[in-house]
Length: 400
Image (tube, rainbow, N blue to C red; front, side, top):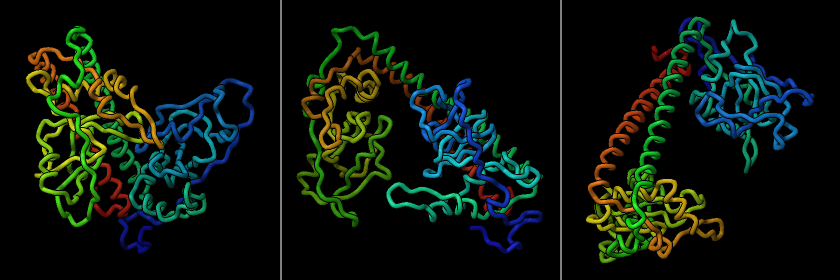
């Protein structure tokens, strides 16, 4: 909640409650006999994305009867159970009881275009986190929502902030589209290359690895960094092993540490996961802490690099067509999907000549470099947005 001492605000700014300047619109639609109308449910809103990119139609058989609240283009839809689901559709439609329909009462006091950004500040998110109702399925009631207090800029300052924040949003949207395009290019290039590999170059994994596959160790971890470092399953990410933020420690013997120590170009495969699509994914080991060993939920493969490059094996392994073949073998036990060493040994990979593998890897590295550049630019744009939002939180005090 902002400090109510007006001396902390720049000239023209004032403290207000959300309910003073915003209403939760409750206009209802009952006649569904006419032309189909678009509706927006929680699953149609992506976290952190103000644009509604998907919707349903009232002609759909699956639409719940409670979806009868009208919204207009420009209204803000705020999910009462997920503060990161916040959107501003550019079309009229319907929504359900879990989404607030927020509309400014007077545009001469609060611009509707600024409203979604006010609800993205950390002040607002912290406020909501402290006021959830319910125990298991938490939700936000209308009363605390409308009681939220914030620093309201003067109208001319609102227009300036909207112009800045809208430009940043446009930049983020363009970068997100570029990321999707480069990811699609990477995936299609891999699949195209694999389609050209002749049938006599399809080889099962047991003929590609000198030893293994081999499950890891999962001794009890400790919070005192005693023993040797090991990984959590979250280290397998986008075809890589990311140790930072995914490392813990456990005490094992020196002999065990030596037997399970990770080396560069080892490949770790996820043996089990509650999400079937994550089961069987793999990552290439590059840099890990000295003496790091791998847990039992991961399986290590050491490919014969004279036959198949480990980096090429990982790219192929995680490709959609190859991964789908592997998880078709997965079995579910107590809600966990698992594959085992036998599944992996029988799994087949396409193995072109190493020169062809190296050429494709060079292309893939260039595409991934572009993706990394896009990610860097997205981070910079997101940081600029956070700085602008902090300007609102601080009553214009950080001079943006």
